[in-house]
Length: 310
Image (cartoon, rainbow, N blue to C red):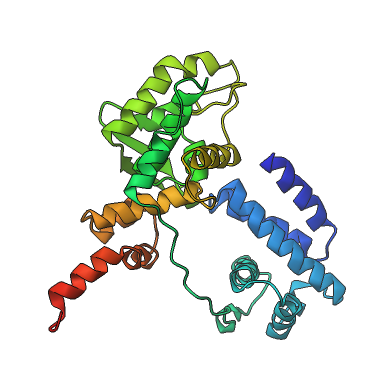
């Protein structure tokens, strides 16, 4: 499905004056940078919007793109959220940097372009008791409860993203040692410990259900659908939503909520930021530091311990 969407996007880009450079950039993201298909698709969509804008302004060469053009482009996008505008500006900046790297442009003025200021939003986190209710939501009477329980346990035990979990193979899970090998953004590999409960749930699924789901075309994918296809990230989101509803948890609970809970609960239990950064696969520890603001009990304890007048 993703490959079809990317192909359709490429066809639309090919119709634009600046489309060839954008297509080459997408190739660079895929082959050289090793970014996932979802990320490449997101960049492609943003660049399609930019190339359409350039076409409407009769800009037919990349050399004609000046800071004033990009400011006009952002003005034309008014009404969108700061996060969306920032993402679209990043896509344009990276396209121009790619053009400098490949010799299409001589001047790199992207550093002078400021992104819209954004409020930092704290992630939504559930209590451990709520997560335990979610993990117990799969009913043994359900035909796929072993798979679904293994998915929920693994997500909470590792903090893996939806796409990372969907991409797992049988060889990526070592139950005897107790770890999972994940490939994050940019195909960066990391090893995350797997708790006993999650290891048992995955083992039960591999022993009792996966052999029944597997077909000749299933390959080595860890989690399979009822037809034997590897589950994709959208299906993982639906599974989490299903059991969140069954457990009476907030409707906004998603796969990424479990990732936030994994991080926040570890930090509340005494984990250090560097270890948490490694397990989450964050390139910058500042991304991990946001979880220090989520655990209010921890902040209160620090305040009581160190403030001269508690």
